[in-house]
Length: 125
Image 1 (cartoon, rainbow, N blue to C red):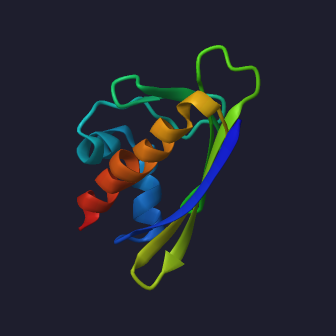
Image 2 (tube, helix red, strand yellow):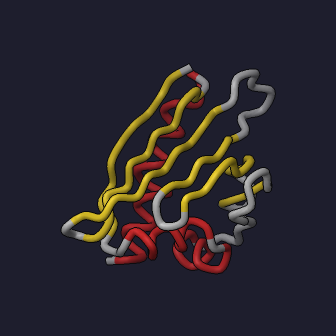
């Protein structure tokens, strides 16, 4: 199991980024795919036409999102924590993804960098 941590800059306020990450209609706008998302702890979510699925653990509006991501029959939970911080250029997004299966690590990191956050950055640029 591996962990990944990285910061991304998004040209929008933390409140706007939070809504973009938690509102199904807005997720669809920046990802180009339908999304199932709720800010109800314990609810299931699905992004990119089901290629990312999991359970929502907790939310702090405009500040923090914690999710459990599913990877097949993985024993230990893979946890994604996204923290939003005000920044001179908009929002500094602190991403921490823990317990990534070794076989999936490169694909997951590439997905964060070139798809997930790249799409969100393009949406606000």
